[in-house]
Amino acid sequence: MTRPGDLLRLQAWFSPAFPVGAYAYSHGLEAAIEAGAVRDRHSLADWTEWLLLRGTGQVDGVFLAAAHRSAPDTVRGAALAEEARAWTGTAERAQESELQGEAFLTTLRAAWPHPALDALSGCLRDRPPLAVAAGFATSVHGINLKPALACYLHAFAAMILSAGVRLVPLGQTDGQRITSDLEQAILHAADRAEAVSLEELGTAAPAAEIFSIHHETQYSRIFRS
Image (tube, rainbow, N blue to C red; front, side):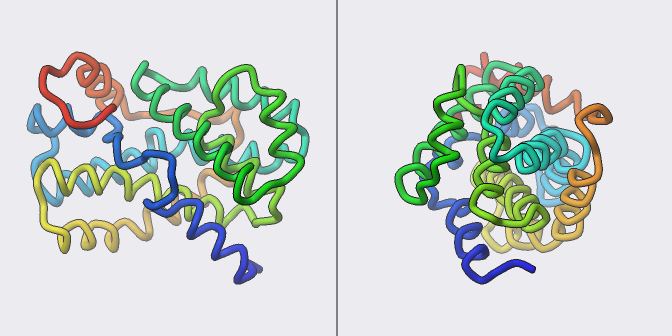
């Protein structure tokens, strides 16, 4: 069961208002829109669903689940942070994940403190990827894995859709239509992430990595990734 207090924490931690700076990133979408690969509501929905099921969403979900299971072992959590960092395909994606992860962990230590979070911070050699920080934190605060995965992946999709609504551009209602259409994909991605081990993990979204690389040298851009 998910307790009401857990739902409140998940809503707060994965809200657009949580101070990790998610609004500043497009996950390479800005370059995809400039190239015409994403140009309307349907192509934005397809792009986001593919990332959830075959791209970064799948990778993040599996690492979140692994970090959740590792807690409160801070040595294992720190090792997972190193491994997750190696799965980041581009410099901008690394910046996106690690700066958000650092902000997430710092904010939780200040507002929702827990000794294991302080211990994890002391074990880390570098900034933690967001998925690892989120998985470890939800576990030590007693939040079940399934709702943590669903809320994290919903926030991941919402970050991309928010950028797409501004860049394509689309109306806010179209953005919410896509959010509604992606509900089953988010739940499926959460189920897959819970079931897949790190040894079985793989991706099939090379276009997203290519556009992320292109974004690093894009002449005119709004987002950091």
